[in-house]
Picture 1 (cartoon, rainbow, N blue to C red):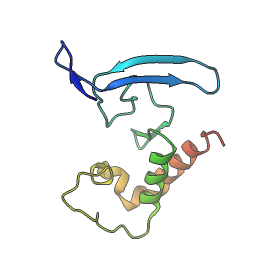
Picture 2 (cartoon, helix red, strand yellow):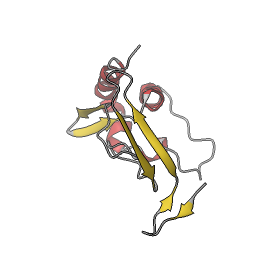
Picture 3 (cartoon, one colour):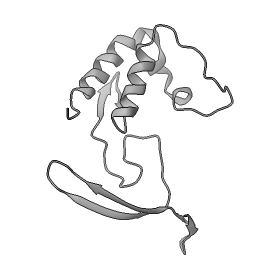
Picture 4 (cartoon, helix red, strand yellow):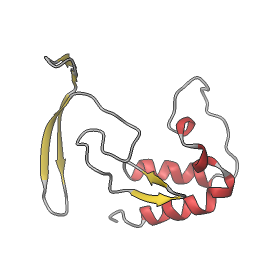
Length: 119
């Protein structure tokens, strides 16, 4: 449940970060999220899944996000979204990532990121 905080932010809930490899934990109150950059929107830490591509940062939040990017960039035919008025992740991808001439390089970087995921 959300509720206003004294500082004007909206309280969303508590979040907990746990590393399954080293056991590191961190907990914090979430007062909203800022999405759309290679920084974790809750804990404000750099994302693990990021790499340089064409002088820019190519990133994904998690395995599912990465799979969507691979599917979209690798698609030979890209159809429009089912609801053109909807604001979707694919609609706001940067132009350089969508260009066919960059497809090979972007897919190579995405593949490299996928190989860093635990099996």
